[in-house]
Image (cartoon, rainbow, N blue to C red; front, side):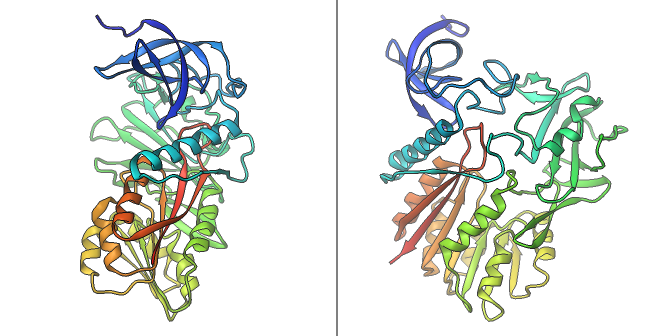
Length: 419
């Protein structure tokens, strides 16, 4: 007999990657959302498997001292799935994330390490930071945010963690007939903004005009975008340098993250004039440009990126540093071609799937002294750190940054050295 919809009482003790707390009921593991470690709660079962249950905490019987009132009225059981920890104080959120990172390192990589999650500047209340928000659109043309692990929409009039410029676009106030998704992109450092629409069919209907002056783009299958009106991207300023970023391309969503991570990578790698540096999964060249400035014209920086729009952006952004070059290629394939090259240091900033054992071993063959690994997923980071250690590296430092307040996500920078 299915227990979905049933109510249970239990105590949750630990946290798990993904925004869950963990408890037990009749010796079965229960993953609980909207709870905090140490709380006794009444939960409603939302999913059942042979090994565990998933549930929402609907009544807090013994609250944690870290519990706060969520700042967004759309947060809570069965509501918007965009935030995981709005019911926790910000210091508690960072402690929870630190615990998750440490647990992934211990469980997957066999490494014991204390972790401290650093606050990013500019958002002391943890709100108003997200510069990219993707809205789903229902059959009536109304835009909203998806509920947790659901295709159902929560219709919101504003998003508490969205950058103010996102709300100013007024996406949820407009009707979007025959549109499946609307993604808003704003710059954290300029006034640029864009709206990317994904049609339900092949024909693009007449589009409403957002409240703010924004470029409008159409997304095709495979992620390619085409400008409908306005520019194809936005501009970002980091360290006194302007970057062009295609509207559908990758960029850090917290306004302070690009500068903080750039400084952290430079501090970690300590590139010297004349050295050769690799920037793998380089995107629009956020790290490539300052690394090129650090090694100077007598050195070189080689970037690798598979997305063609990002490669074009990077080449544009690096036009004043000809000793920096970006190749459009799969990273593992490109590293095989560079097997005989001498490299001094490297930075990798892969997507959530990580780099994998092959790339770790290929980097080791290049005899570089240090790798800085930027990651937004503690589980794949731990897996890849284990691969780097197996290839002869040592984890010498690990920093974690609260680049996604109110959510379970955390940005990490691991530094791996070779003796």
